[in-house]
Image (cartoon, rainbow, N blue to C red; front, side):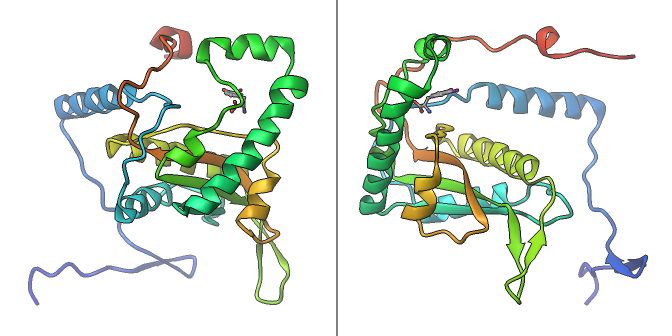
Length: 233
Ligand code: IYR
């Protein structure tokens, strides 16, 4: 049929390639888009006070799809997103996380660490793990398991999964929801509770939902452009 877009496949070194589809903007449009994107992202805050208001599963699915667009070493996509709304599992996670945090705050963390955290108002109470309608636990796949149960190498796993998490956090914010990068340490209990296979390691935990009414966030500043940039022209 005329007008129908056909996928034009070109071989490069024996592997199929397709022409890049990319949009181009005028410089003025580009600047406007870049400003708008920054303005949207700069409104993101880590939130520790969640509302129990439900969030549709379909939204969570779209957010995970966005995260899955991240680049990865040799395109291995070494990530798994476990999305939990089960009240029992959230409860189990909260209990285990609080147990670890009690040891963290009372023994494992240094005086300096506790001092550095003081402005953020964190403590061992992780009730948001039960209140938020969803928790996504991101696992990294340290290696892949082949069809003969052999180990297949993944590359730049931490970098790849870190980038995917950044994109997930941006997608969550873009949807008008809030989250928190939570890393109860050590996180092995998450593999047990969620019965994950041996090649997966917990990487990051993100409660997702709406902020509680009257939620407060710390009054802190981001570094300026000149503080975070060095131009070489
Ligand atoms: N994992 C602990 C402590 C904690 C550590 C850092 I670094 C933070 O930026 C925030 C908290 C907790 O979740 O309370």
